[in-house]
Length: 252
Image (cartoon, helix red, strand yellow):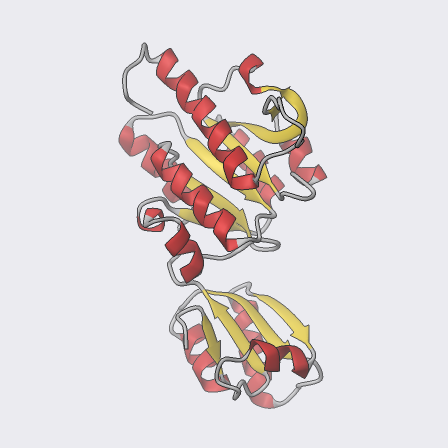
């Protein structure tokens, strides 16, 4: 069994009680017995996402074929708090540089963005509890080890988190095909870069919480970039502007 998936009532209950982070809990529809109710109570305490699915779905997901009506997807790595990310910036004496992911559900994209975040000097990544890949083994492998160095915080409401961070002096720019060219924007200071889902982009509420929308100039026939590539392009425009503001000093 992988480190990301747990099956069986006892195993899942022990995981909750030991404090292990469970990203999602899948429960068979109609399953109402005592052990399952106990697991659901523990899930509620940890604010774990619970999905009720048909038995056939659990059978498809099961690696052991003995799921007992419940399957949990656990994080392979621990999550940080948003304050941990801000503290990291303060310790380095730098303006915070955060990357926020809105609806990035492909673990390969998530891992690639984590890798970019680390190389570009971002202090951390923030993801929502809903509509997001978790810190799975696939994400860790794709990140080429960046998951060990770049903290990831998981929040309940991304737009509310943005508003709270604004009160601490950060401002936010989101990737948007129809936005102002990134070359025409000033992207310095304490900043959060928001990257949306490849298909639908940044969600309306999150976009409305942002201060600016940045577009990447397109010269070819295809209108958009892969989400992780767009994150890299925009992140490095922020890097370029920060270096320029520092007179070319290699400090991001």
